[in-house]
Length: 214
Image 1: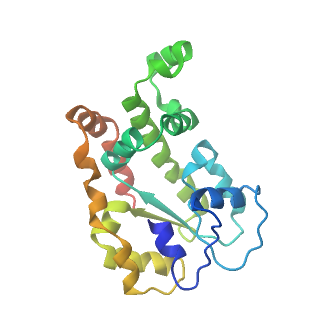
Image 2: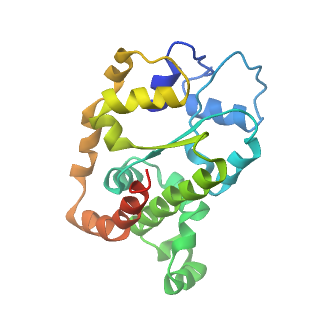
Image 3: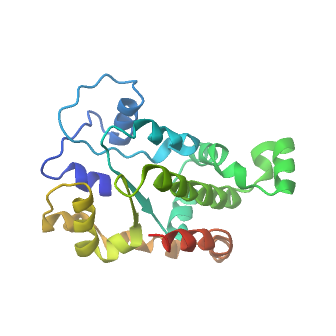
């Protein structure tokens, strides 16, 4: 959502050449696709997983990184019900596996993914992924990294969005906020009681701790 809004803003260039702009951006950033820079771009880098340290290789390249922190109920719901099984497993094996208990890790070593139910995989993946922002923010510093809570952005868009545009040094227009819909906050309401209980026990403390650091 935010990448789309920024890309469509005055002063930005749309790099995408296919229907999958996330993949287009990944191909450019990885060097797999030849590309001649024509101006300012906005890339979404959701899928770095365990390779997030690649951000640190570009410290002198004058870029801004916006990290969207989102409540675990909404994110885990998407991981469980909107993501394909392969994508969740890749995220879990990329970073979530590091949070397995010793007992569960032994079972995983023996039986593989069958030893860890899908909800556990999603919760641990969420915790591991959002915790990366500590290392990223401390390494790159406040001039390069801005951490924004997704729910705060949606609810207080006329306040938060101008702050984001100020951070990226881009002129802001009030109509940009029209692209933000509060309906996106209702996703968590679809969780089952079992899912909600585990998410609140496993993920919510990690989220609340990081949010206090904003």
